[in-house]
Image (tube, rainbow, N blue to C red; front, top):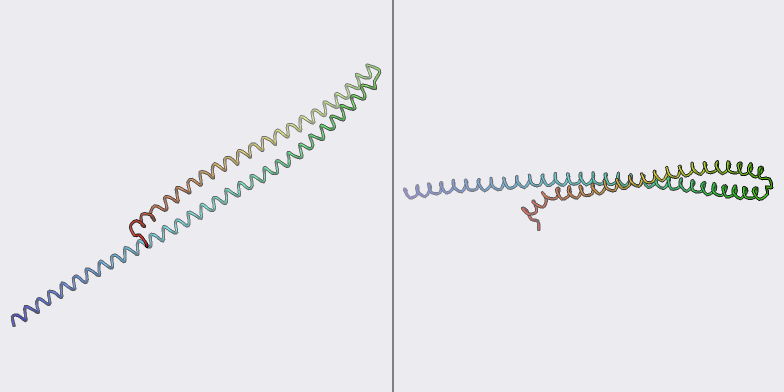
Length: 190
Protein backbone atom coordinates (compact mmCIF):
# COMPACT_ATOMS: atom_id res chain seq x y z
CA UNK A 1 0.00 0.00 0.00
CA UNK A 2 2.84 2.34 0.70
CA UNK A 3 4.16 1.56 -2.72
CA UNK A 4 0.81 2.34 -4.28
CA UNK A 5 0.62 5.62 -2.48
CA UNK A 6 4.18 6.44 -3.61
CA UNK A 7 3.29 5.54 -7.18
CA UNK A 8 0.15 7.71 -7.00
CA UNK A 9 2.12 10.62 -5.63
CA UNK A 10 4.73 10.21 -8.33
CA UNK A 11 1.97 10.06 -10.95
CA UNK A 12 0.40 13.20 -9.48
CA UNK A 13 3.79 14.98 -9.53
CA UNK A 14 4.40 13.82 -13.10
CA UNK A 15 0.87 14.94 -14.01
CA UNK A 16 1.53 18.40 -12.52
CA UNK A 17 4.88 18.68 -14.33
CA UNK A 18 3.21 17.62 -17.57
CA UNK A 19 0.44 20.24 -17.12
CA UNK A 20 3.04 22.97 -16.33
CA UNK A 21 5.11 22.01 -19.36
CA UNK A 22 2.00 21.96 -21.55
CA UNK A 23 0.88 25.41 -20.32
CA UNK A 24 4.43 26.78 -20.86
CA UNK A 25 4.47 25.34 -24.37
CA UNK A 26 1.04 26.85 -25.05
CA UNK A 27 2.26 30.25 -23.77
CA UNK A 28 5.31 30.06 -26.02
CA UNK A 29 3.18 29.18 -29.07
CA UNK A 30 0.67 31.97 -28.30
CA UNK A 31 3.48 34.53 -27.88
CA UNK A 32 4.98 33.45 -31.23
CA UNK A 33 1.59 33.80 -32.92
CA UNK A 34 1.17 37.26 -31.34
CA UNK A 35 4.65 38.34 -32.55
CA UNK A 36 3.89 37.06 -36.06
CA UNK A 37 0.59 38.98 -36.08
CA UNK A 38 2.35 42.19 -34.99
CA UNK A 39 5.02 41.72 -37.66
CA UNK A 40 2.33 41.11 -40.28
CA UNK A 41 0.52 44.30 -39.23
CA UNK A 42 3.78 46.28 -39.42
CA UNK A 43 4.47 44.86 -42.86
CA UNK A 44 0.98 45.89 -44.00
CA UNK A 45 1.55 49.43 -42.67
CA UNK A 46 4.92 49.57 -44.42
CA UNK A 47 3.36 48.46 -47.70
CA UNK A 48 0.56 51.01 -47.36
CA UNK A 49 3.05 53.78 -46.60
CA UNK A 50 5.12 52.72 -49.62
CA UNK A 51 2.03 52.85 -51.86
CA UNK A 52 1.14 56.32 -50.55
CA UNK A 53 4.70 57.56 -51.14
CA UNK A 54 4.74 56.11 -54.66
CA UNK A 55 1.38 57.79 -55.34
CA UNK A 56 2.78 61.14 -54.17
CA UNK A 57 5.82 60.64 -56.36
CA UNK A 58 3.62 59.83 -59.36
CA UNK A 59 1.53 62.97 -58.75
CA UNK A 60 4.65 65.15 -58.47
CA UNK A 61 6.03 63.69 -61.72
CA UNK A 62 2.67 64.36 -63.41
CA UNK A 63 2.72 67.97 -62.19
CA UNK A 64 6.28 68.40 -63.46
CA UNK A 65 5.36 66.94 -66.85
CA UNK A 66 2.30 69.20 -67.13
CA UNK A 67 4.45 72.21 -66.23
CA UNK A 68 7.02 71.20 -68.83
CA UNK A 69 4.27 70.73 -71.43
CA UNK A 70 2.89 74.20 -70.66
CA UNK A 71 6.37 75.72 -71.04
CA UNK A 72 6.83 73.98 -74.39
CA UNK A 73 3.47 75.33 -75.59
CA UNK A 74 4.50 78.84 -74.53
CA UNK A 75 7.82 78.51 -76.36
CA UNK A 76 5.98 77.32 -79.47
CA UNK A 77 3.65 80.32 -79.29
CA UNK A 78 6.58 82.70 -78.87
CA UNK A 79 8.43 81.14 -81.80
CA UNK A 80 5.29 81.53 -83.94
CA UNK A 81 5.06 85.15 -82.83
CA UNK A 82 8.72 85.67 -83.72
CA UNK A 83 8.05 84.16 -87.14
CA UNK A 84 5.29 86.71 -87.69
CA UNK A 85 7.64 89.51 -86.65
CA UNK A 86 10.41 88.22 -88.89
CA UNK A 87 7.96 88.20 -91.80
CA UNK A 88 7.06 91.78 -90.91
CA UNK A 89 10.76 92.71 -90.82
CA UNK A 90 11.20 91.12 -94.26
CA UNK A 91 8.28 93.11 -95.60
CA UNK A 92 9.70 96.31 -94.08
CA UNK A 93 13.09 95.58 -95.66
CA UNK A 94 11.39 95.06 -99.00
CA UNK A 95 9.66 98.41 -98.57
CA UNK A 96 13.00 100.03 -97.64
CA UNK A 97 14.56 98.53 -100.76
CA UNK A 98 11.67 99.92 -102.79
CA UNK A 99 12.17 103.33 -101.20
CA UNK A 100 15.90 103.23 -101.93
CA UNK A 101 15.21 102.29 -105.56
CA UNK A 102 12.68 105.08 -105.77
CA UNK A 103 15.23 107.51 -104.29
CA UNK A 104 17.85 106.44 -106.82
CA UNK A 105 15.45 107.02 -109.68
CA UNK A 106 14.56 110.46 -108.36
CA UNK A 107 18.21 111.44 -107.94
CA UNK A 108 18.98 110.30 -111.52
CA UNK A 109 16.06 112.26 -112.96
CA UNK A 110 16.73 115.50 -111.15
CA UNK A 111 18.69 118.14 -113.05
CA UNK A 112 18.44 120.86 -110.56
CA UNK A 113 20.57 120.47 -107.43
CA UNK A 114 18.06 122.29 -105.24
CA UNK A 115 15.26 120.07 -106.47
CA UNK A 116 17.55 117.08 -105.92
CA UNK A 117 18.28 118.21 -102.36
CA UNK A 118 14.58 118.55 -101.60
CA UNK A 119 13.86 115.11 -103.02
CA UNK A 120 16.77 113.62 -101.13
CA UNK A 121 15.50 115.24 -97.94
CA UNK A 122 12.05 113.76 -98.45
CA UNK A 123 13.47 110.35 -99.28
CA UNK A 124 15.70 110.54 -96.20
CA UNK A 125 12.66 111.36 -94.06
CA UNK A 126 10.90 108.31 -95.48
CA UNK A 127 14.01 106.22 -94.83
CA UNK A 128 14.23 107.69 -91.33
CA UNK A 129 10.60 106.77 -90.73
CA UNK A 130 11.21 103.30 -92.09
CA UNK A 131 14.34 102.99 -89.96
CA UNK A 132 12.32 103.98 -86.89
CA UNK A 133 9.77 101.31 -87.80
CA UNK A 134 12.54 98.77 -88.29
CA UNK A 135 14.11 99.82 -84.97
CA UNK A 136 10.78 99.28 -83.19
CA UNK A 137 10.40 95.88 -84.83
CA UNK A 138 13.95 94.94 -83.83
CA UNK A 139 13.21 96.03 -80.25
CA UNK A 140 10.10 93.84 -80.34
CA UNK A 141 12.19 90.92 -81.58
CA UNK A 142 14.71 91.55 -78.80
CA UNK A 143 11.90 91.44 -76.25
CA UNK A 144 10.62 88.16 -77.69
CA UNK A 145 14.13 86.68 -77.67
CA UNK A 146 14.50 87.72 -74.03
CA UNK A 147 11.17 86.03 -73.27
CA UNK A 148 12.35 82.87 -75.02
CA UNK A 149 15.58 82.97 -72.99
CA UNK A 150 13.57 83.33 -69.77
CA UNK A 151 11.36 80.40 -70.76
CA UNK A 152 14.38 78.26 -71.56
CA UNK A 153 15.81 79.24 -68.16
CA UNK A 154 12.50 78.24 -66.53
CA UNK A 155 12.63 74.88 -68.29
CA UNK A 156 16.20 74.39 -67.05
CA UNK A 157 15.11 75.22 -63.48
CA UNK A 158 12.15 72.83 -63.78
CA UNK A 159 14.43 70.07 -65.06
CA UNK A 160 16.78 70.69 -62.10
CA UNK A 161 13.81 70.52 -59.71
CA UNK A 162 12.64 67.30 -61.35
CA UNK A 163 16.16 65.86 -61.08
CA UNK A 164 16.25 66.71 -57.36
CA UNK A 165 12.77 65.20 -56.90
CA UNK A 166 13.86 61.98 -58.60
CA UNK A 167 16.97 61.80 -56.42
CA UNK A 168 14.81 62.40 -53.33
CA UNK A 169 12.40 59.68 -54.51
CA UNK A 170 15.30 57.27 -54.94
CA UNK A 171 16.49 58.01 -51.42
CA UNK A 172 12.94 57.63 -50.02
CA UNK A 173 12.44 54.30 -51.81
CA UNK A 174 15.80 53.10 -50.48
CA UNK A 175 14.82 54.29 -47.00
CA UNK A 176 11.35 52.69 -47.21
CA UNK A 177 12.82 49.37 -48.44
CA UNK A 178 15.32 49.18 -45.54
CA UNK A 179 12.78 47.71 -42.99
CA UNK A 180 11.61 45.16 -45.55
CA UNK A 181 15.20 44.06 -46.21
CA UNK A 182 15.73 43.74 -42.47
CA UNK A 183 12.56 41.63 -42.19
CA UNK A 184 13.68 39.46 -45.09
CA UNK A 185 16.94 38.82 -43.25
CA UNK A 186 15.04 37.89 -40.06
CA UNK A 187 12.29 35.82 -41.73
CA UNK A 188 13.50 34.59 -45.11
CA UNK A 189 10.67 33.34 -47.28
CA UNK A 190 11.27 30.37 -49.52
